[in-house]
Amino acid sequence: MLIDLANMIMTRTISSRENDRKGFKVIVNLKERGKPVDLTGYVVKYEAISPYGNFVRDDAVITNAKDGVFEYTVSKEAVSSARVWIGYFAFEKGTERFTTQDIRISLGSDVKQGSIQIEDYISDFDKLKKQIDALQVAVDKADVVKRSGDTMTGNLDMDITGGFKTLQWTAGGVKKGQMTMSATGASLQGFPSTGGTKTAWAYNHDTDAFNILASGTNVLKKAGDTMSGNLTLDRTGTAARDILWSKDGAVQTNLGMNSANKLRLYDNVNALTVFEHDTATKTFSILADFKTKNDTDWTNLTLLNGVTNQTGKTSKVKRTGNTVCLTVNVIGVKNNQIITTLPTTFRPLSDMGFSSSYIKSDLNSAEGIITIRADGSVHCEWISEGSTPLKFWSFTLTYLI
Image (cartoon, rainbow, N blue to C red; front, side):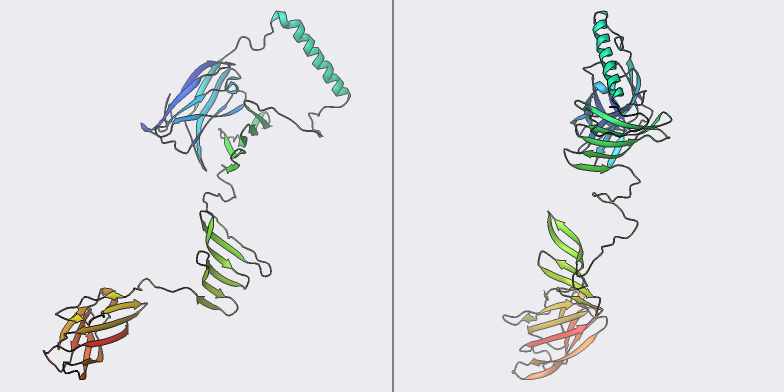
């Protein structure tokens, strides 16, 4: 059978006979606009209702999830009464659920249904008489539950071997709801006046999974959901309350109020408090290393115009917040010379000048001017040696940008 989800008028009709015990198998190729539907991770159910209001929910078997192929062997419950059954296939994965178009199964009458073989007539009559006699004895002893309402002192047992049983509720003869119990779990269905079937919840006791399928629930779903109100964590005395984040079952981080009435973020991996706010003193303390998006590590500079680093030393720059630290250790500097260009993140908004001592070729010291321009160029000026290279120049500058 080919079912295309995009073709909502493609109703299928299957003909069979009521009480066909061995049932029959339906092999389905599920497509959407001609393309196979990937059923990986889904559970496929066949849900149907008889002309008399009886509900069937059976498992189908996925044989090729990638290509959307599955098969369903019709159970004896699904052929238990004649006339037309209305069914469909439902696909469920977590909180997700979608269904196919209606499938009609037309069951012809079983001519044996309700008939009694002549050779068995007397024995069946005797059995029926014994049952009536036993019922009369039970009535005489008041060992029955009254239809108008009564109380049982024992259990109501329903054998679900090979199928399921339901408790049904009606209004004016119209079925409104039912609780279904099968060998694997239980579910609650409703039958709205607009038609169809709504499953409120389903529980599988083999996997211990309880799924709320009603769209209007006020319960948050474990797989992810949205709250429209507040989440309140009430504390008593010195108790702590936290929201925890974990990975592979191990807590990594928790945010909350500790026993000292401080709001804090705690790093469980490194066993340290990242920050805390003291409601009594109105102070906010950062206890971990603090970095901004502009912070850098030490960055080595590229020297220009024949200037080189002193032996065993480097020229580098670092930024912390809005503060830049520049340290230079060079030889071969001449007057009015650009010795390096700073990367963009270290450049000031306008030109900045600094005075610094340098060592001349005769090993005497003198004062010069270092100008850091807005384009990042570092100029060495006011050098008395002129075009004669200096012995060396070492300086460290700190400025705000």
